[in-house]
Image 1 (cartoon, one colour):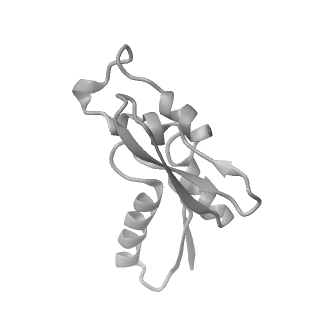
Image 2: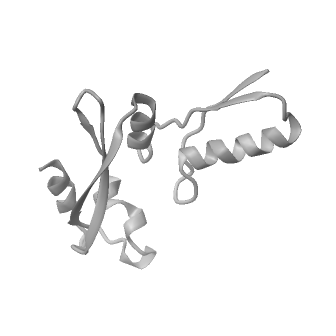
Length: 118
């Protein structure tokens, strides 16, 4: 039996890859003979870059940019075999970079996203 596990991320808790792995572990406990194929998915939001990099055989690159409160953050983006780049705004300006009390659109910025594009 072949089982495909295709999941998106669970916001602020599991990446798509981690969710797929967790489900596969659960299935293996019940159906150990099955062949499992984990396919991390994305809906265009967080996790899209990771899904594209994995599916297309790309590689990760890092760049130092300003986070939403101008603190330095290391943002990752994917470089695909054809030379194109894929990136997520969340790497430079995502909620995961802020404590709940810091989430104020009047004080935060997406300047780092522009730095990533440079």
